[in-house]
Length: 184
Image: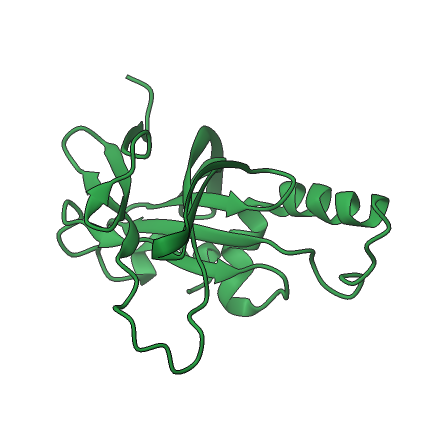
C-alpha cells in the first residue's frame, strides 16, 4: 500500500469499481510501512486494545501491538481515495457465527471509512460490519480450499459500498450491507 499523503492522483484508478472483489487483510500487530495507513485509521482502537491486554496482566505484546487484524476495500478515483476498513480485536468485536466445518468465524466488528482528498483526511464511523476470520489449514491438508470470502464493490452512481460474506456458497445472514459514503 502506498502512502496516502502523496495524494490520490498518484495511484491508478480502480478498474470497474462495481465488480465484486475480495476484501484485503493485514496484520496490525507489528507496524510496517505497508500497514501504516490502516494502523493510522485505527490508532485509537488499537491503543485501547493494547491497554486492555496489559490491564489483564498479559504482557506478551509489550514490544508490539496486541492481536489486531484489519480488512479493507480501497477505491481510487482521480480526486480522492476511499478506504472502507473493519478492525478485528478481542476488545472490539463480538461473535456472530461460527462455522467449524468451513474453518470460518464471523464477527461483528467496528467499521470506519477514511476519505483522502489530497492531504485532507476525513474518517467516519461506519458502525459495525462482518469480519471473516479463517482458521489456518494444517500442513498437508488435502481437503477442499476454503469456501469462504468477504467481498465488496462500489456503486459509483449511488456512492454506496456493498459488502457481504459468503461461506460454503451461501451469503451469511446480516452480513450484506450497503454503506453510504456520503450523507444523502
